[in-house]
Image (cartoon, rainbow, N blue to C red; front, side):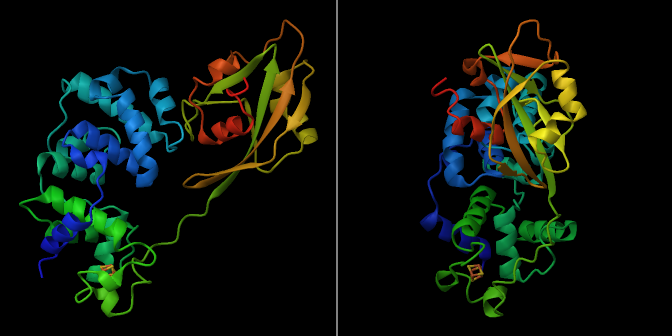
Length: 354
Ligand code: SF4
C-alpha cells in the first residue's frame, strides 16, 4: 500500500473547505498557519478573516504599528506570534522588496518561522517536497508506524521528521501535507479515532496491536508556575490609568492596569502595606470601592490568578508614575490588552455602558 496515495484519496473525499486552502498566496498561508498554531480551526476562521481584512497583504502589515497589530490579535493570545508576524512582515517588505522567500531555507530566516511553518509555506505555495510535522502528523505517524519515542522530545521530533520525509509524495507535496494534517484532525483524532472506517486499519501498528490509546507517547509536561496579580483599576476624574508592559515576560507591549504581583494572594489590607502600593500612591488617599472575584488564566507554563481592585482618587495636583497613561473609557477600547483583562472589561461592561 502506498500510504501517501491513500491519504490523498481520503483527503479528496473528506477535506473541509477552508479559506486558506483556496489560495497559494504565501502571505495568506503564513497568516493562517500562525493563527492555527495555537487556535482551533473553527475559532481561527473568524480571526483569519478579520486579520486579512485589516492587513490584506504583507505591505499593510509591515507598515502598521505594533500596537495596531496587537490590537487585531486580541483574543487569540500567545502574542509573541503577532510580534513575530509584524517583525517578519517588516523584513519581507523592507529587505526583500515585498517578495516572500520561495524556499524552506529562506523562509526559516524570517522571525518566528519554525520548521513546521516553513515546510507548510514551502510546500503549499512553492511545491517544495518538505514534510510538515505538527501534533496531528506526529500522532498519525506514531500510531501508524508504531513509533514509541516521545513525540514532544527532540529525538521523537527528529524521528518523525525523517519518517514524514520518507513518506512525502514528491510529485504533489502540497496535497500530501494537507492530507496528512487533515487526516489527523478528522480521522486519527487524539481520543476516539475512527479506526473502524480507517483505510489503514489493516496495516496500522496501533490498531493491530491494541495500542491506539497508548500512542503517541508524550513526555510529562512541566509543572505550571502560579502567579498572583493584583490589578489596580484607578479611577480619577473620568479617567483610568493604564501601563504598557515592557518587561521580558509575558504580554510584552500590551496594556494593563498598574500591577502588584506577589507569590500568594493578598488581602486588600496586606496589599495596602506593600512597598509597591506605597510607591504608587505615595501620600495620596486612595479609596477602594470594589474588589473583583479571582480571574484565572492559563498560559503554556503559567497559571495567573488575578484580582481587580477598583480605586477612586480625588484631588487635583496628583502625580502618579509617569509611565501610567490616563485614558478615557473610549480610549481604553483602542488599547491592546491581554485576554485576561479583556475578560474583566467585558464582565464590567466597559465600552458598552461607557
Ligand atoms: S487505524 Fe486508527 S489509529 Fe490507526 S491510523 Fe487509522 S484511525 Fe489512526
